[in-house]
Amino acid sequence: MIKVAFISNNLIYGGIERFYINYLNNYDFKDEYEIDIIYSGKCDEEILNQFSSCGVNIIKLEYGINNKFKYFKELKKLFKEKRYDVIHCNLMQNDYIPLFAGLLRGVKLRISHAHMDMSMKYDGNKKNIFNRLGKRIRVRLSNLIANKRIACSEEAGKKAFGRRFTIIYDAINIDNFKYDDKVRKSIRKSLGYKPHDHVYAFVGRLNNNKNPMHALKVFEAIKNIDKSAKFLIVGDGDLKEEILSIIKKKSKYKQIDPVENINDYYSAMDVLIYPSFTEGLGMVSIEAQCTGLPVVASDNVPRTTKISNYINYLPLKDDVNAWAQVLLSYVTCNRNEIVYNNNYSNYDIKDKAHELFDIYKKK
Image (cartoon, rainbow, N blue to C red; front, top):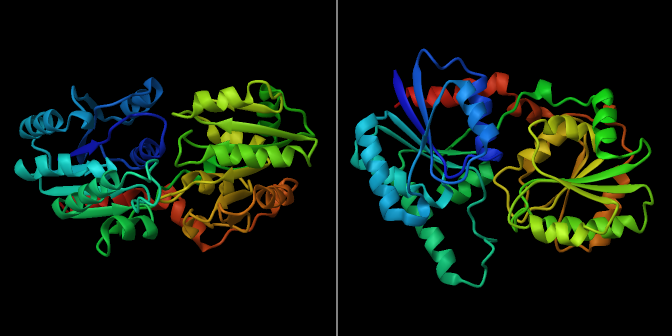
């Protein structure tokens, strides 16, 4: 049996967790692999249940990356006990901690996985040069200690690792992301929307990097033009309370927490805004296009997300009215007229699931 440790900070309904659940659910690994999910931060009960149903073990550490020395000691002790063949790290700039613990304990395959743009052109603290320098040093350390580097896209890989890395796409079960008119009607009814309403949506973490505040400004511009407009925000995060305070007296706005069946909600929407400051890939834009939902994204989103003719990339420096006009041009698109290109097949989990486990075999 090949013993694998998948290391993350939080186990919440985010891109990293969905990536691993998708791969675990679409590959018969149980006869060849023993897999532990190791985390130290927040957890979502539903995500824990999904991981457990995949047939993996869940290990919660006492200390996390906020107490780096004790976190390192705890990992080193665990690695000595478990004798892993592979550690697969997903802590971004903090991968160096488990990687170094793994190096000292003789772990043969030490993977650093870049799920995001590590260029630090936006980190929520642009004025703190020491903070930015520290992050760059930690990324370099992770790169040095890892002996295998994985990235979700060419752009993410180049910025995190330079030249030597393998792309493993954040693939999904494409069959689950199909437009469904019956589902559309059901979800819209549950949200209180009428058939003629135009639903403009934002889906993602409510944090600075995902830039939901830009979406709100664009929505305000649209509201003055499209009298049938409704605005749906799906997500949770640091900015949730601030966003709720902004929209609480605005009847056209609605915020809901992340949902497991986001594929159904895409069918209920008419156009998606995706104004991120940085993205390693931008899986939400892929999922949306798979359901035929038009996407207007920032030009910081990698072009590998262009799997159809239903996505447009705009600079964040453009006026919000320019963004509004592009969103308005998409809102009445026929979902069945979407045309997919060759990139589409890169995200089909049925074809891609074996690629991750093939890497583990080469320990």
